[in-house]
Structures are given as C-alpha cells and as structure tokens.
Image 1: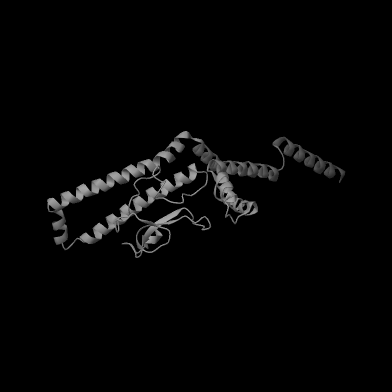
Image 2: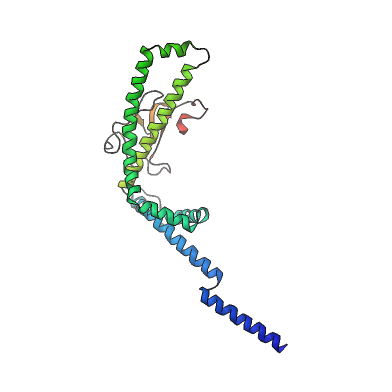
Length: 249
C-alpha cells in the first residue's frame, strides 16, 4: 500500500510540474485566450468607430440612452463576435481595418458609385435612343415571345437598387466622417458626399420625404429617436417583378 501511495503521490507531483511548465491549467489557458480575443474585438470596434458613435449618442440633447444601456448593447455585440468568429479571424479583421488601402477603398467607393451612376444614366439614354432609331424597340414589341414591358421594368428596378446603394454608401461615409452623426438632410449640405442625388428609376423622381407616402422618390429617416435613423428607402407603394415590396429594398 505504501508503494502504491508513493507512486500516486509522485504522479500527482509530476502532473503539477507539467502544468506549471506548460503555463497553467487548460481552463486558465482558455480563459487567457478568451481575454485576448475579447480585447482584440474591442480594438476592432474602436477602428470601426463604435466608441465615437456611442459618445455621440450619449451627448445628444434628446438622448434617451445611458452609459449602462450602451454597455449592455456592446456586451451583446462582443458576445456575438466571440461566438461567430475565431481569434485568428478577429486578427485578420484587425489587419484589414488597419490597412490604409482598405480606408482608401471605403472613401473612394462612394465616389466611384456616384460616377458610375452618372455614366450609367447617360449610357442608358444613348442605348435607348439607338434602339429607337434602328428599330430594335419596335421589333421587341412585336415579338410575341418577348415581354418588352417586363424587360424595361426589370432594368428600372436594377437601376433603382444601384442608386439606392450609392446613396446608402454616401450616408455611411458621412456618418464615419462626422463621428457617429447621421445627416439631418441629404438634399442640402450633402453635396460633398453625393451630388446630384440620383433618382429611383421606377418613377424617375429623386424627391426626399421624411414620412413614407408612396408617391415616388426616396424615404429618409433622420429622427435620432428612431432605431433606423440614417436609413433610406424607396418611397413607392407596390411590388417589383419578383414580388418584393419596393419600400423593402
């Protein structure tokens, strides 16, 4: 029995020594890894401007939020990143956001979308005029196997989605530059980010309203008390070719 006791005792000592050499118990190492991952997630949020946005929300004269409210929101956001991304993936994201080329891409994307939108509009007009003069449109109308009206509707819907994406990108750039402040108005004082404001192609209107009326143009939410503040939608009643509500674009 004594020999068995000594063997067990030495085995326990050896196990403890191995634990010390390797840096602690496995649970401790896991905890250290989780802490490092969490710290990197917080760093990522700072690079994405979350801290600045939170400060802006708290400093608003009509803010209904407290620091505790935002902390609760941040903890949930952190837990989701902890759940869905590995530590290595978080590090790769950090590299991306710290890369000056990525910053340049974000800044230039809205400019490229604006220029592409302007070019596409003129290009479409040119193609349409050519189709009218060379008889293409008349041929399409006369062909029983083709639905010219449906084709045109699809093209207008695609152009509307493209213009909507350009406006949303411009709003995002504004939000980033203004440290978490949404533009109050995108028809005046917004020229630096997108000018002129492109129309939705269904009705051809680029009017902007702050309450949905379904009469064409864009519907922009700029009420800071609204959870969707800074969001823009198509201000048209009805469904597109695939049965999706225009206002849900």
